[in-house]
Image (tube, rainbow, N blue to C red; front, side, top):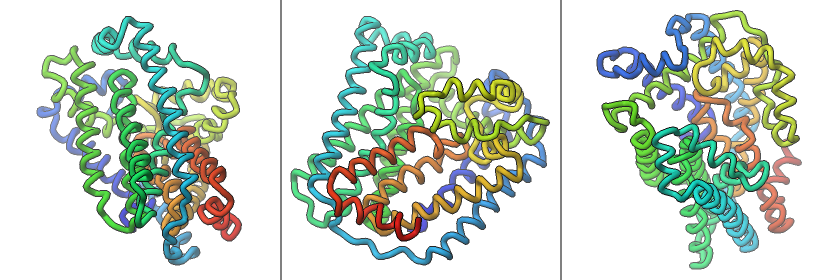
Length: 415
């Protein structure tokens, strides 16, 4: 399935970003809200410099060369082996997903009740989206709870892998897997109305489609991907209709322009760091996920408080892209080395995913995160890492044979 290998995904993501940004900037009369949105984030279009564009092209070339070199070294993937998945894994996946879904649902209900109910919370989201988001964040049931709804992508991808891998699934297996996929989709559709976590839904949709394509070896997931794209669009424009009362043109018009704005913003965040002298942060951005798991994120960020503060002048809304994060952290040489290492790692993950249902679910987390590479280094985020950990843990608990056939034999052979 070359369509979902890491290089193809990265090429498609950057092509869409660059083309959409060009359209937005080339039609100022049509997209009249764009100047205001750029002004709000202090984005100066003079930050689009040639040296920044050269870095992006160089970074992509490094990635492509190392990706293809790794593919040649690994050789063609082994033929997939059907029926590797045990019924115990199906049960574990179902109950783990339901437990996390229950916790997330309880969190939403608790936050809504504390604010007078669902309707007042939605009204607050329309009047002040940031305040509504704070209502949910302040109602967290325990530290680290946000990883649970981010991890729904991992358990749902595992459910899809189980279903696609079994040539004759039982009615019970089908029901449990469909319940996992549907409940995760519902939760990640509801949350953006208040939390503005729409990219989690996009990651969820892409992860399920990639898993199905790799395991089944067919393009049938494209229909589900199209349906998911429509669901994401509905959530995106629904969120804008709810929160853009300041724009008189309505949510649909504002939503389209904000979508295009993000592509301009992402491209600017990728190029602007090259247009000014910056102080490198030496891994603070790239390795932040490990600090989160060590419960030392605040101390981690405080170590680079000075350089991070100076980066505000070359950063619009959101985060740096994957390629610009590598440069900001380690400079041109170190950033190039980081990109080369990631290219080899992701290609190896894809190679494993082509021959194992469990490894396909793991790679799907990476591949789906790469669709967001122009927007943020999400592939290095704690959400993705936690989803991968969850898949490995559930696979390990399901039995020695399943775990070895899925991941650990490949680790020993090619680690």
